[in-house]
Image 1 (cartoon, rainbow over the protein chains, first blue to last red):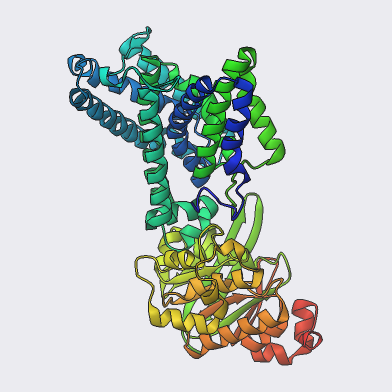
Image 2: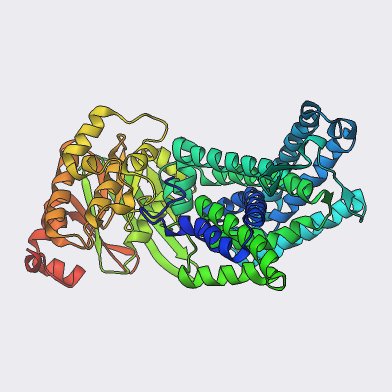
Length: 330
Length: 241
């Protein structure tokens, strides 16, 4: 967990989600409602993490503020409809094998398309504005708007229904608590992505280069590595992860809209900032915290739910202005 | 004098609207240690960064082994065999000492014999091999930064103020390490403000002022000429014994 625990022995931020869960239990009162809300929060957190993890690396590695990241979330969801809707017979069959036979290619197609588009986006939109933050915001925001409008032009302005595959519907009942199957799957996929990212970052030469590049890209270049190529690869991978997250988010909502990427980008930016720019572990914790808090406040004080994430971000930044696990820049 | 491995001819570097290096001419003989001295703000660090391609020369030639490298990208300069130890040390704090060294070795596995030699120069690195580099002291970070430059045989070392802010005992250790590098005929261009270090290590010297080289020659000659030191540097080596 070297990446997630950038500061040795600094475990307090890592304990925050557990503290939040324990704090919520007496406030909610009902253990079954608490289990349901916690599962929902963890599932939502994992999906946000999948969408945000690429963005934090992109920022950490090349100091690029990519507001266009949301476009890949929407595009991933739309590409998945190209596979899932024609194969509706498979997805609605009451057999997990048939469901997966449609779902897995849809996920792969979404990731391949968004990864490839990420390469184009980096080349055409981002590369001309390296090192110019204001222009990055304007240009990538423009890219997001153009992508949104293109999606609306190609698929129409109405939302597209994307029903969950039959085998993923329904709930698992634990005592009095019901946990939706899809939420469990989202948690498993999110954890798998997190573990895979940690393994790559901590156990491979590529991961070492990414971590070193996030800290001090100039020094990595002085050692003889082309950080720009590394960044392009990370940008494509981050875009592909956004695509994967987009499909999972769309299945969670059971609908696809051109604006879904922009809507979720607010949460994505909050978790990236809360976690510490460039920190994968911080991003993971931030995602879990934001999603748990949104679910708990949605139950306890619905009127506060909308602003709870902003309040969380303000509180954490007052405590740790660089985020939960900031990456030391060289 | 040995043939120059690195030559700067009429090099100018602009950073934004500032004209930092203003026609620098420097020759670094192969197999020797050349000191680059000068007051703060004279342009020494910018000169090293220009050689590495971290700042682009706006005019002039940077020739390495006869080839003009002024237009090369930094990774290409590094892959010619030029290692750079920046003033900030540039160690990757979240990576372990070992991981820092693995990256510095680039495409090769760590060489045991080379590593043993480095551990003889800097024993602390062996002790803290698996600790994050961010946990090292300032002196140990400097050792790591220099060790990274040595983990594979490089043709030229560019080292920027390695003794800055370090305790005398650590400085002595670094002097010994550089003397060992001289024994194995490593070519070094060393920026330094500590004149005791400069005198102990330098074979040749270039003195920079306002972005230009105002003196070049043997270090021993400068060390023995107090009037020249006063004129070039505004102080004498004798006061830094």
